[in-house]
Image 1 (cartoon, helix red, strand yellow):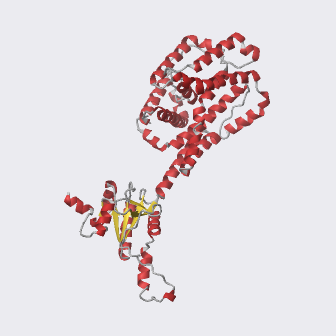
Image 2 (spheres, one colour; image 1 turned 90 degrees about the vertical axis):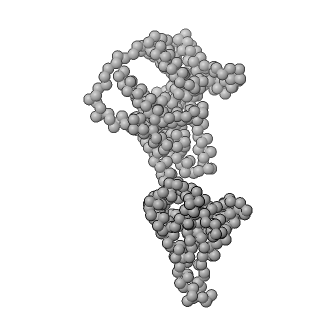
Image 3 (spheres, rainbow, N blue to C red; image 1 turned 45 degrees about the vertical axis):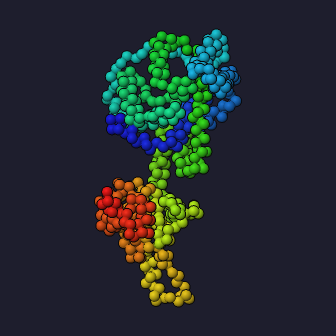
Amino acid sequence: MGVLQLGRLSVFLSDMLVSGFTTGAAVHVLTSQIPFILGIHVHSFEGPLKIIYAYVDIIGQAFSCDQAVMIISLITMIVLIFNNEYVKPWFRTFTKIPIPIELIVIISGTLTSYLDNFHDVYNIRIVGEVPTGLPKPAIPPVELMSAVLVDSVVISVVAYVVSFSMARIFAKRHNYNVDANQELYAMGASNVFGSFFGCAPIAVSLARSLIQEAAGGVTQITSFVCCFLLLFVLLFIGPVFETLPNCVLSSIIVVALKGMFMQVRDLKRVWGVSRPDAMIWLASFLGVVIIDIDYGLLLGIVTSLVVLLYRSQEPKTARLGRVPNTDVYLNVKEYSLALEVPKISIFQFTGPLHFANADYFRQQLMSVTGLNPAAIVATKLLEPKLRQPEAGITSHQTKGVEYLVVEMSGVSYTDSSGGYLLSQLYKEYQKAGITVCLAALSGSVLQTLDACGTDNVIPPEDIFHSLHDAVVALTNPDQPLGVDDISTQL
């Protein structure tokens, strides 16, 4: 994926998708740690609704919790929370070096468990045997490639999205940039190297990453030190941690998840700003929690694409007016200072113009401006014959409008359907006695219209570089400001 530069597809991972996805993943991590914190045994479930089944099992064992384990877990979490909320901020005023509270808790838990023999006396689950040494390198069994290919692709995509999502979260917290393709290269190289040692697929660990950040690690040196210490533990001192209670490790993980769960505030914040963005968050979160991580990711991406298409299909439109004695043009429905220019109706379209929203553009143009060329032409033909008031025919004339200016500064691109539509509208309004003018087109849009032959229908003198140029030229015919006029002057 890195060689194919597929990292650019990460643009579809919106902030709301990442927030909802990682919050849902945090629910999975929390669920996996609850049995260790409560001292119960929960069955392993797979497939959709496995989180629901797990909590049903947990609730069913509510009266079977191990009190000793719960007390140890509670004490551990209180110590960690008190440090994070009170001691760490106070200690930061004296030095940037954080208190390694997680390491202190692990050493204390291991030592206490060893001295009091937690496993034998209280039947508390401990880490147990930690094998030392490294596996011998071997060539991966290539004959299994066809059997695991599809699953490998799915795992690689999900692993990358989880890793990149966490990278974006930390990048936002610590103000640095993340290169999507560089992350692909790093993960790919790590997995290729690890395959010769029987390693599991390499990806970010949500809990361990959060614990590392909570401990004050914010640079790559932290990862280097962690790898060195991990290698040292695997080779020499692994057995020292055999008596560490699992509930202590789980408590550290659960406390570290606080930041992930606080992302729920993103939903509250965006709900009042953009309901479609809120739907992306909910779809990602609920998909991950209720179905599974891979299906939740797919649901979040599909929802993001649907929202993207919806927004591009129905962009916002407005009828603009000019603020007197300025070159500022605002929505006449929202700003009372904006006054419509005599003989000119200004229509603003703030999105791409393409085949999917061409009909929407036509409908909005006629609805917002109140100028329907077919109705105007029909009225002009009927009025000479039916001028009597009792005939019940009201005038649908142009309301004194001679020019219809389409403000296109918000049109990022158009296609052949958009160019054809503009040509058709120009002809239709021309029959109704109204001249359609285009204003504030980007260079790429102008090139597309030229390639579509639109310039053969709409003359250059009716196309303007800016909206104000159009208004000035149309209200002062002696001052040409069309694109060809300005190009000639330049």
